[in-house]
Image (cartoon, rainbow, N blue to C red):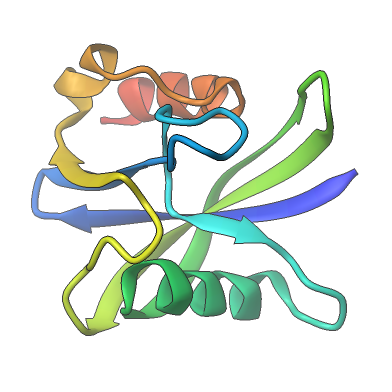
Length: 127
């Protein structure tokens, strides 16, 4: 099982979503920013590193919002989504095709990675 972390970053009533690059698995689907936990890293360290690499920002990582296990045909992921805030920097598209800030009511307008479906249901229920 692959350990993956992601950030739920809010800007007032909107949260950040990122569109995967076309050439990667699940290309052009939307997701929360994050990535794989490397050996020797805590989940929080991995999330901070991934956001520096992908967005050029420094995060403050908060509490876990939710974690889910999802089986794709090619891998099984244990995804932990943390509440986080941008402490430093302005998000840049260093790896993603696009970045958007959306409200909970706009979720259904975007095609997300299947592993995010449970998270999105919880977001709709919570907000």
